[in-house]
Amino acid sequence: MRHLMFRVALTYLLWPVLFFGALALTSLGAHEDGMSLVWFNGVYLGLAIAIIALERLLPHERVWLDDDRQTLANLGHTVLNKGLVMVAVVVTASVGLASAVQPPSGSTTGLWPGGWPVPAQIVLGLVIAEAGLYTAHRLAHAVPLLWRFHSVHHSVTRLWVINTGRFHFVDTFLSIVMSQPLLYLCGAPAEVFLWTGAVTAFIGVLTHCNIEMRFGVVSYVFNTPGLHRWHHSMDKSEGDRNFGENLMLFDLALGTFYNPDRRPPVRIGITEPMPASFVGQLLEPFRSER
Ligand SMILES: [Zn+2]
Image (cartoon, rainbow, N blue to C red; front, side, top):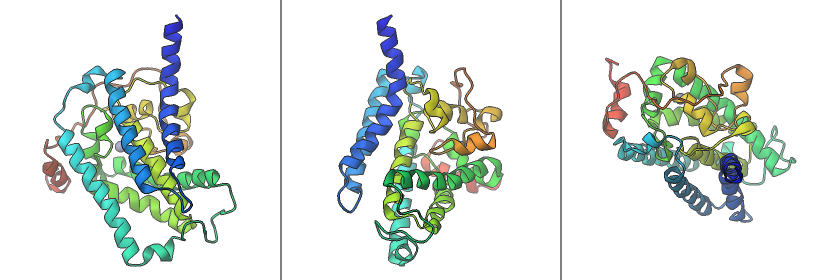
């Protein structure tokens, strides 16, 4: 009995421990000028390795441990997306856009409440970014042209940590365009950009994991694996729900929140065909007969 209670408590604690633990570790490595990106990437990699180990120890769906022959394609999309983000940073910086629109670390412009405690500013940054991310994601499901790109992400038949970066680069580009300029326009300081990015990265890597966990009230604040498994359902009445990337407040406010008290489907994916190869997946959205 005591053993069972301990196990249940553990399943409730895992998500908060992994998420807030990663944030706490990231802040430990921060220096005077703000977050250390090298340190952050180390924490991110450590979290991914911990998740891979926990997926083997405590799988949510045992059949999702079977190889779907998509690991190389998933990693290909991940590398391309990381490259795209870096190119975006370099291009913005080299044309001087960054200094024109983004204030340096520690300073803010007009609208931004720079006097607030930093954690409160980060929460505000997350809410503002979420408005763009939620809209981009909802449109990606509703507009057939955008679904062509987003369906690459949904075409997986199992969820695990390596799916995290599996997005067509056009899909990623649209999410960036819909969210980052909002923060620029509000005058958010560089520190808020970095922490918003860190939270998005940690939530993203947890969201797709195949670990048996419970979430309770956490699912009413953050996007959790429990909610995201419904989002990957083949049934549109379940899949066109839970669009939040980090926070669930827009789903709750706009009626797309979905968290029934039963197990999400094991069979996930899309009804349209999707090539198995990385290059095939990159080209698929551009095929006219789709
Ligand atoms: Zn989606």
